[in-house]
Structures are given as C-alpha cells and as structure tokens.
Length: 230
Image (tube, rainbow, N blue to C red):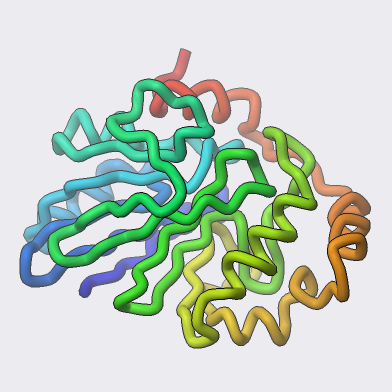
C-alpha cells in the first residue's frame, strides 16, 4: 500500500493519497482545490490511476477539489448522503465500501462535528482517516453545520474507540505539527477522550470559544456544488 500525507498550509488541512501498489489504483481523501496540480503531478509520477476522490464532510475552511478531480481524471467523487451534495458521483452511507484496487475503504458515519461527517477505515491495514471527527489531541468543533456534541460523543466513544487500539489515526487537520497517532495513544492523551460521561463531554464542547473559519461563507456553498464557486 502507498500512503502520502499532503498538507495545505493555508488551512492546516491534510489530504491523503492511498493506493494499491500492485493495481496502481488510488484514492484521494479531502483534496483541496488549490493543490490540484500537485495531486495530478503526484499521480503521474507514481503511475497511479485515480478511481475515487472522497470528502469526509462538507468543509468550511477550504474548497474541495472533488469536482475538478472528476473532470480531470474521470474518478468517482464521493461524500456522505447526509451532505445532500447531489453533484457527487456517489453518496455514501454507513458501512459502504470503496474499492481501490484490492484495498477496501469502509465508510463510517460519525456525525457530531457536522451532521454529514464520515471517517474512512482500512480494516486490513488497521488505518483510519478521521477527517475532523477525531484530531490528534483534539476533535472537531460542534457549533456550526448542524454539529451536535451528543452525536460527537457517541461517534468518538462508541464507534471509533470500538476499533482496535493499534489502529493508526490520520486526522483531517493539525495545528501543532503532529501527523499521525493511534487510537490507544489518543485514548490515553486526548483531552476530548477523558470525559467520564456524556454530560461532561457536552459541557466541555459547549464551552469552547473558537473563531469561525475564515473561508466559511465561500467554502460551504462551493463545496455543496462539488467545489464550483458561484
């Protein structure tokens, strides 16, 4: 398996290229439109065919490259059905599988940060791409796009922490220079995973005071149109 972790410095966004090394087929998770040329060059350099571009949710901090990648490569564009992004090639539901050669990404519905948040799990590789649901030593906020701290609590504590402890965690963002973790490491060290019950978690999340993303008013409507700016 090939994994490349790519970083957008403007929005602190991680994009992931994963590929079946034998079949030379690839997927991109959470691609950013300003990095389109980088993705296309990397695919060419590694002799890979892009079969799927996926968003973990409708992003508020950057504009997706899903539509541009589909136009340039013919790949499927995929996002959760709760997003209501009708221009996507495929709207995913919980448990759906995305085949990338012999690699199989399982879509896990993990609402809370937004009502359309998904994680993508490679069970054979014990690897989890968490989007904004679980960050290293943190989690996504819950104060816009129908976010809900109660839903996030269940997504984190009941769904993600039910996966094997050794599962590698690749987050959708990082603001401290951390690139990967494991579920066990997060369970031991992530303040969002130390709450004794749901009520404590909800209180903690509701007490957060975080400025809105600077691109939210442009990004959200554009991302609901597969990255097309109005």
